[in-house]
Length: 177
Length: 460
Image (cartoon, rainbow over all chains, first blue to last red; front, side, top):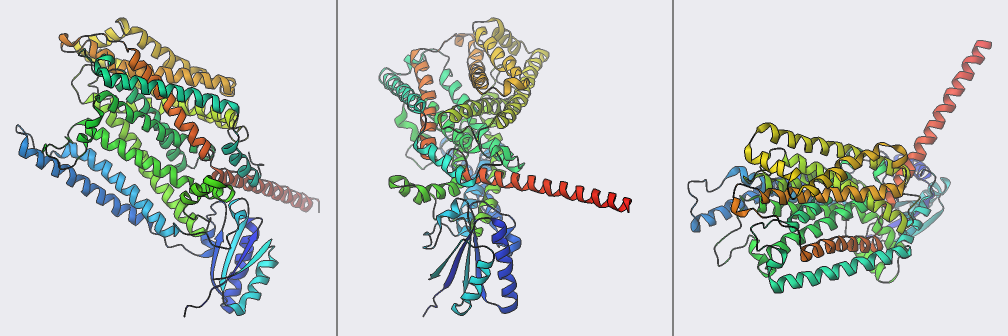
């Protein structure tokens, strides 16, 4: 049977307080290993989050690279196949059947199109979208508050709650999933 | 702008979706009327044939192609400038990039109509698609016209995705505050965005990567449109500098359009706190710089034709200045070459309505530029039997006016449904400026403390 997840969702009025709360949770975790996962919610991007929560492994650029190469090849195949098909019905008058200089333009566009499309696909994969809104999602997070979601074992809940509260949490919601 | 509260940013931008000024409805009504006139003109053209668009004369590329080039050009500044300013981390782009990107999208949609109108028989349009068919004929990918189709399709799709991805965090804000059909729409489009760190990290990477693709893409699109002309052997079209000249012209007309829409949105949606004089000043300076690049390329083109001493090229150039199309050419020079010098003056750049009227003059100049690129060479080229001076007729002019109505209508509807100012990016701008100023204050206090310590040490 799947173990139920125990979560606490705290909201803060500014980023600095949330950062202090995460730092304290990390310290607690180092000492006692009580935190299973921390997720930060914010209305804007904070690049410092990577330092706070650790490195995010999101190799989106690999998708971009391979997507772009696929685009180049697909575009070449399209124009080459169309040129071959035309060759059977239209005389070329000594011109090359597959003229590379003119095909480069289409290949260039194909590279960009597939590159962009694969980047978007990678974005949805690594951002975990589309998804349903979590029940404890606080709409204030899209306005001006910062949210911290902490996953832990039920026996550690009080310690985590104290850490969140001592750093100025405005509201703490308890969630069982 | 550093003192605006985040909650107020949400409130102001969301209010723009609900209660614009009365001018919104007036402009929208005029636009719809223009579109209806255009539909009537198009129906009339179908019924009576392309002769009513004066294509019964050997002068086939006229106003429809000029309009196509004009609208493609207009589409350039939005996405291209947004992408360049994003990569160079220019934060003043943040309140204005959303509507500029939307402008790109609707300009492309407007431009795409003209080749269809120009071809006449719309019901055979599917012949241009590359699919196995009973004619056993495929589209000819060696033609710049097909490059055009590929480039514009790529540009349109990439621009839509760039606009959409950049809008997801704002759609989530709309979702959290909307009711009724809007709630359903925003919920579907925001795809469950909650502002998690994982989402933001993936978002920023994606946004920058797409921007990296869009810069060369935008340059390639208008270069390819230039190739439609430059790859031919027509005098005054067969010019090596055409691609950069077209790209500079596209950026120029696009920037002018951004200024027009900037003032319009600022007034209609009450965005005075976000679309500030400071941002207008920077946009105007950028437009002025691009205008000077365009001036240089334009004069360079005249000089290279003159010094090449090619009799056909020279004849077309002379005819441009003293022939039947001379008013168009001189009008272009006045509106697009001389008028931008007004932006050299700070007082002028800070006057919103003066900038609005100037931007319209610049766009008129760029529209005339497109017309003088397309029409005059056809009136004096290598084949004397094709020489015909053709001025646009009622049907063509009606469809041209309708295209402006169509573009503005789509744009206004977009701004009424989606936030035209990026809420999260403005919040970021406010956040970083506030932090920068508090950091400066801390540094100043530190310096004062050091000086006090030093002087106390000296006294001791």
